[in-house]
Length: 131
Image 1 (cartoon, rainbow, N blue to C red):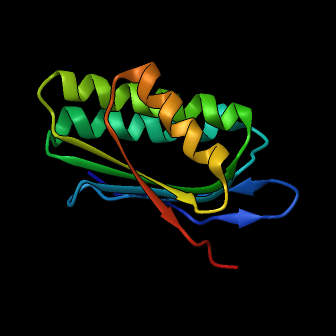
Image 2 (image 1 turned 45 degrees about the vertical axis):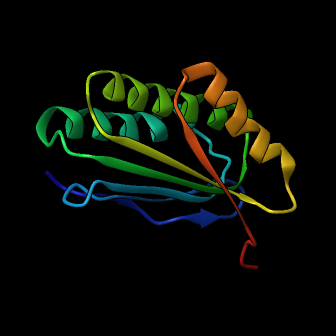
């Protein structure tokens, strides 16, 4: 199975950096997520995850390190977390780490809402974003 990597971009829209590693099971999305076609972008990530779960069936560590995301990105992130929770419920090993800017409580609160919505344990870590 191939890794999925997307280089982050910023401009009129902000595309997060994505690194989904099939051999290690370590997945990360970082930066800002404000996209023109959010569903298309995140559906590619969800498709990769679903293929990983079917083909590889190893542990997944998913690191979210977003400094900003809009409402449509938030819905898509929730969909990723639902896929991970389903995998966990089917005996898959899942670790979710949520890194939030130490000065932005709203991003931390989003993770708390995701935990309530999915039942998935999310580890929280404050960090200082790079300029």
